[in-house]
Structures are given as C-alpha cells and as structure tokens.
Image (cartoon, rainbow, N blue to C red; front, side, top):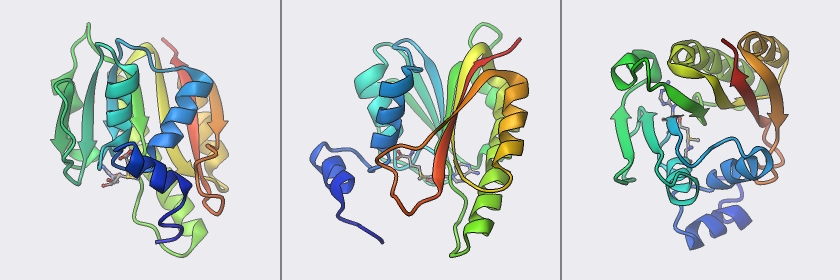
Length: 193
Ligand SMILES: C[S@@+](CC[C@H](N)C(=O)[O-])C[C@H]1O[C@@H](n2cnc3c(N)ncnc32)[C@H](O)[C@@H]1O
C-alpha cells in the first residue's frame, strides 16, 4: 500500500479512528456544515467505520446512522445500525417511513480498482449511479447527498443527473485525499420537491 504510514494514517491511528478516510469527511463537514446534530444518516460503504465513528462521536448529538457494507464492521455505537450486504440488494424502505426519511446520504463506496484510471473512473461512476438511484427515494426533500467518485469524462453527466434533483452540486477535493488519487467528492445539496 502506498504511503501506508503517511500523516493521516498516523493521525487516524493516534485518534483511534478505523481509517484515514475520516479526515475527508471531517474536512467536508468543516467546509459545508451539511450534517446536523439530529440527522438520520445513511452511510453507504461504511466499513471499516470511520465516517460513522466521526459522525456519531463529533456531530450527531441525538442523530442516528444506518451503515451498509458488503464487508462487516467492528464499529459499535448505540445509535448505529449496520446492515451487511450490497446496497443494490437492500430494501431501504424497511428502515424509513413517510415521516422519517434520511436527512443525509453519504457514500464512500468504492468499486474494485485496477491500474487503469479510465476503468476506475467508469466503474466508480457506474456504482455512484446505482447508489444514487437506489437511495434517492428514501432521502427527504431538502436533504443532502455526499458521494465519492473518480474524476473523468463521465463526471459532468453524473453531475447533471444530480442537478435535476438537487438545488446545488459542489465538487470537493479534500486535502487529506492522496495527491495521486483522482478521487473527488460531490455534495448535492437540498433535494428538490
Ligand atoms: C473506502 S471504503 C469506505 C471507508 C469508510 N467510509 C470508513 O470511513 O471507514 C469503501 C467501502 O465500500 C464498500 N462497497 C463497495 N461497493 C459496495 C456496494 N455495492 N454496496 C455496499 N458497500 C460497498 C466496500 O466494501 C468498502 O468497505
């Protein structure tokens, strides 16, 4: 693994976070302040668990998180529920009601990557599209969607799809993201009626 012992890796270890990824979400939250203390959050691709750990320990005073991942997590918290499985196969309707939809959907899910950047980009956009389509109906009007992808030629098409459903779509490259990585995050804010 590249830069295994880089600054953020060591910081995550020192601060008892399960992954260095946590600092990407922390930076986004500091910049956009989009997660509120009472929110009900869906964390797609949540394992090993650092995003959920950060939200529950630092942001969500009373809010709750539903985490979904193909791989299990050892993260435990009284306001965290974990479902093991592929987001495509999970019936999210079981976890929401008309009066209680998700306020935020977050996805750090990543497809299997190869050495070919174009393939990684296309796989990532395809996964993002699946996640978007399988979760948009369980997000409340006014809710936000924060998702990781890899930059490339189909990014603008995906952003256009998001723009049809959200008031604003911002692109965010965290400082803690590795320089050589093409990963970026999109924050689609305020779901339209
Ligand atoms: C980079 S990791 C997420 C790290 C996590 N945000 C954290 O802070 O600990 C990406 C995760 O996405 C999951 N994933 C990829 N495709 C998925 C899918 N279709 N459904 C659910 N999880 C998926 C992988 O199993 C992997 O655990």
